[in-house]
Structure formats: C-alpha cells, structure tokens
Image (cartoon, rainbow, N blue to C red; front, top):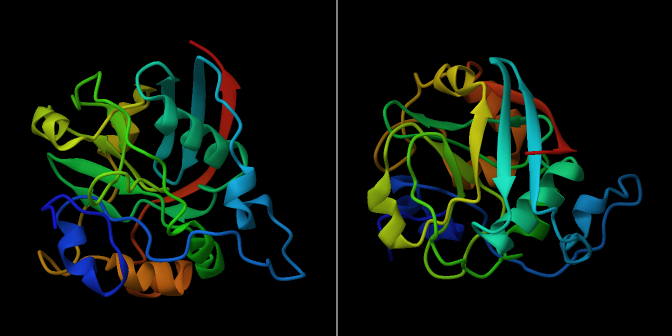
Length: 227
C-alpha cells in the first residue's frame, strides 16, 4: 500500500499519511424515500465539464475560488464539476489541514452518501501539471482510486507528481482563506490524533462537530463559467 493513501475500510490507517477518501461499495444504492438527492446516484452524475470553469467555495474562513482546466486532468475535472454542481461539498468539513503541506476535504456529512460514493472511482489522469502551491488534486490510495476527496497544496509538492496526483485546477482567489483553515488538530491516526477518516465516513458531520468543533466548514460551493 502506498504511503499516500485514501482511506478504505479497516486498512485506513495508512490512508492518513496523505489523502483519505471513501471505503467500499460502488453501485448506486436505493436512496431513502425522504431524501431523493441526486447524490445518491453517482452513476448518473457524469456530465462533461466545460473546458474551463470556476468553483466558488463559501466557508467559515471566507471565500475561495478554484479555476478548473479540463485539459489538465479530464476525468478529475468532470468528477469535480458534477460533485460541486450537485451540492456534494455543501456543509462539509475541511478536516485535514497540515501546515506547510495541504488542506483536504471531501467526506460528506451524511454517511449514507459516503457509502454510495466510496467505490465510485474514476481512472487516473496523466499528470500534466505540477502540484505547486495553490493547485488542487484528488486524493488517491493507489492506481485508479479517486472518488470525492480533494486537497489544496500549501507548498510546492512536486514530489506528488510522480505518485500520480494530477492537478485539475488551482486556487485563483482566496488563497489566504485556504491558508487560514484551522490546523490545530493535526493529522489523523496513525500519524496524529486529528480527525479519523474512517470514523468520519461512518458517522458523518456529528463526529466532526462533537470531537473536532473548531474545523472550518464549507458552507456551500457553486459552479460558474469562467477563465
């Protein structure tokens, strides 16, 4: 298993070394009758993204904007586009913030949605741009394992390029906001005592809010044309 992993079931411990994502199930599940959200149907959310678009994130620390270039990483751009425009990142926590390294988010607040996305993977894109400061890439735990979690690099993380982390966009407004995300909890197990991705996926926002109340929150995210 790679050092830079996303979280998967009981083997999530290594996942926290760099970028943790979802655990097991890949097909659309029957949604609860009271919640017919499109997010319960990952296989339906496959619209092709515009060549260039912007995603605006309103957070408890302020607003930041990601400009996405589909040519950089088409599969990643398409997935991000569908997640943002269908509200996936609304009311989620920026749960992994490591000073001088990265800020990561993408675990949904509803465990039922985490279940249906956990194996809804996208294949890898070739790395055409470097993970320099401000670039945004998907978390991954090995080849062809990207799902919903993304991170923003705080520094030049070019060492991630060779590990297959393909940037699909970059922060073009509000990098000071990204820099300000609460980092006091540190990394998760086994490298620290911060938020544990496996528990977060299983329990959702109540876990974050009870055990890590100072985490910054993404209030809403929206897509606009742009460049």
